[in-house]
Image 1 (cartoon, one colour):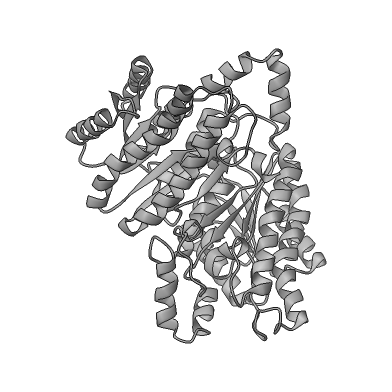
Image 2 (image 1 turned 60 degrees about the vertical axis):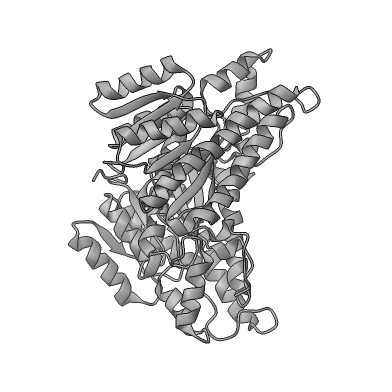
Length: 265
Length: 254
């Protein structure tokens, strides 16, 4: 296999599990050095680093609360110092509400703030500190992991939809702003993907097995995505394969967004 | 990178521009490329270029608006190949005319090549993909399929139709494991664009102002559009269907 990211350095936020972990491992297989960011789940971050090293890759664990400007700045600068620059940023960290129902009439305003801080402000902060590093290299790529929930509304996902919708527009805004500096910014909008977050979401449903079947059937492809299927789309945007694409929001959803038959789940 | 080893690709509008670039890239990645176009010389030259590199290609002179010819070509392809894995509906013509100055025949010609051609190829290829367990279709739309421009009534209508037919097909044939996506190229350095620019009073100034409207500040090379086609046609996009991917240097993001 040819290596499409040979000797590039990529900062991947939320790389302990799910899509972020899959991206970190895939980018590493393509020759990139990886900054593995996690927040509190140090064990999971260490596991990603260990798995990259086992495959002969190079990785650095960078624990940081992605919503804390000082910590994000330090993580980005540490990576740039240790690995001699940054070429690729993947804004993948994301959370949903855990204490209160995610609808406007029920959500605790502090929990709303927390979701927006991690999912949206976190992407802004990592970009804010990574872009100057990319400029030093003459360009770079930012891949934002949004969601189909950034394109369509859904019950019980008020703060989540809002944060992901913001991410889609932040993608377009940054693409327009930094295009002339050869920094491309795109986002992928995954549909239902088999991650820990998805399993948690399923667990909250009345009938998890039934719900899973319903979710799978909502995509014309009739199934749930694997994290690797999303990771390959991130690889496309992080590589020269997509050299004329910026500001795009690519649904990776098995056809969900194209479908005219839509139920309210 | 050999994403298309042992795969058979049908590519329309393969004689020049984006189609020709895609044919060369598909071949490099191991595909048997079936080049369809009405331009015999163009596809024969492209085929020779592929064969010279010890890759696999077959030229077929085919008018995509002629259903009898399309059906016959698909049959011929299947005589040479075990099946069809990828269809790229890329054939397209352009018309720079406002609605009231467009003749009925001109309207029908643009809609026939750009939209009916895609319908006919898909109609005759999809049953074979359904029988063989799946496939991928990539349609070439345009940023003119997403935005309105003056003096491009028939072209905008046809490319908007490509976007919607892509979505419809994705929803209809997803159950057969056939993925259908489209790309919306921005301004690309192709014979079509060079011809349009040459009609301007100051082609260089016009080119400069159009480039400045793309956040990346330049035109695309045909290979850059073709690489997006290859991605969508490959197994790397295995959960992507019904997507409308702008390949436009950021034009439609603003």
